[in-house]
Length: 211
Image (cartoon, rainbow, N blue to C red; front, side, top):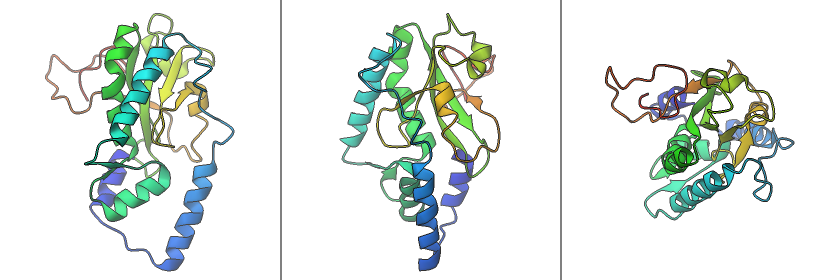
């Protein structure tokens, strides 16, 4: 939703009461989609490497919530408040993605895993992105998005609930109501200033160095 949302932010939309009602109904419907695809429970961590990764993820979300200068929002209603009212609000999916990546990347590397971004429906108004983590020793970097269920590939997605939610990749891919294009890797960090020697050479890198 990165490009599409930024374009929308530049053109604030005024909705009539009737349009608001329809928007809220659609929003609540979308928010309920995926209830049968819950994130991993914290008491069932699965892969041992996910324990310190989850801890770093939770610390990142807690710190963001405690920041007095930014009001973090989540989900479709959060997107609506950010786009319509602006101000110190944050919480579009790519903002959560960047926050989470910065907060967990050191821990991910310490446990020998890799992290980067993943996006579905890229370039459309249903675009959604998050952070993907995986064990490069067991899943080749060029097969991350095609990994079978049960393989060590997980998505860290704080946008949906504003919580440190971790999903197996195959579960996360079932969450969107509409998927207009297949999932793609979004190399992170996106705020790095890439140079000809710093650009990633493949779709995923254990140490992403450019956008």
